[in-house]
Image 1 (cartoon, rainbow over the protein chains, first blue to last red):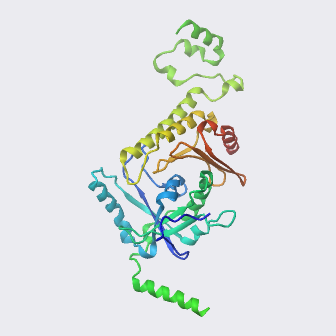
Image 2: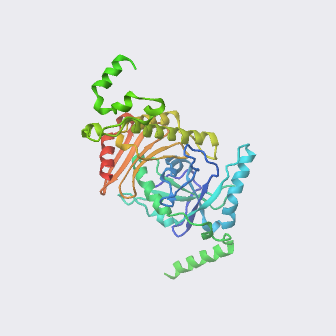
Image 3: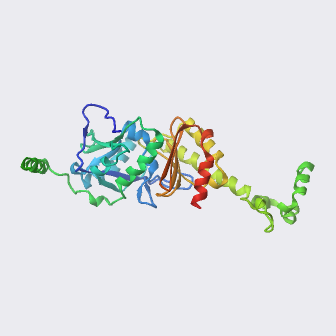
Length: 192
Length: 167
C-alpha cells in the first residue's frame, strides 16, 4: 500500500524516532450544545476519529513534530503564535489552549500493515518555515474510503492517549548531541 | 378541529387519553399523546413526538457544527460542502427510529462522520466532500465495508441489526 510522497525532497522518518501531535482546544463555545471544539474524546482520552480526516492524510498530511528537534517551550508558545496569526488576519480570538500531546514512536505508525504486509501509513519529514521538526503522516490515495475508516482507528490507537506537555524535552537536542548519536549508531553497525 | 380529523381520532380513542384530549388546553398538546398501559405492543411503540424531536435534534446539531466551522474560520477548517450536507440530512432522515443514537463528528475538513458502537464492535459511516457515503462495520471479528454509495443506497437494515445487537 504505502503512502505516495508529494515531492522528491521527502524523507521517511526513522522508526526509532518519537513524534508528537499537539492537541488544542478552542476557548469559544460554538456548537448548539455549547461544546467547545476539542480534538480529544473525553471518554477515551484519545484523538477523535473524526479529526483524522482523509483529506489530511492524502492531500495535506497529518501534522506531527519530531520530538528530537522540538521542545516543550516551543509547544507552549504555539497557542500564542496561532492567536497572533489570527489577529493579523483580522479574526476574532479563539482562545486556543494546548491540551497536551499525543506522543508515539514512528515504528508504531509504520508497523500498521495491511493483509499483504504493506505499510499503510508513512511518516515523512517535512520541515517548513515555522518548524524544522515538522513531519506528516501520509496515506495511499487509492485506498477506498471504507478501508480508510478501518485504518484510521489503528492510527488513533498508535497515537495513544493524551499526555501532558511535560513529556516533551525542555529543549531540542543540540546538533552535537545528534551527531554523537549518529556516530554511535554507525559504530554499532560497523562492529556487527 | 375539522370533522374529518375528529372522526379519525374518535375511531382511535383508545390510543389517546380521551379525557385530556377533550379538555385540551394551551400547551397540553405539546406534551405528546398518552398510550394506555394496557394497549397492545404495536401501539406502545416509541411515541412519534419523541422520535421526531430526536431526529430534529440531530439535524440541528449537524447544521450547528457545520455552520460553526464556517463561521469561526479557524486555520485550515472547511465547512461541509452543500453536497455533503444534503447527503447527511438525507441519511439522518432515512434512519430507523432505533438508530438515532449516534455520535456525530464533523471534521475540520468538512467530512461528516456518524459513529455507532464502541472500540470493539463499531459501525462508522463517513460522508466525503462530494456527498458520497462509505461505511466500515466490525462485529464479532467480522468486517464489512461499503463504498461509493448515496444516502438512498445505504443499507439501513444492516445498521438497525447492528444497533439491535448492541442493546
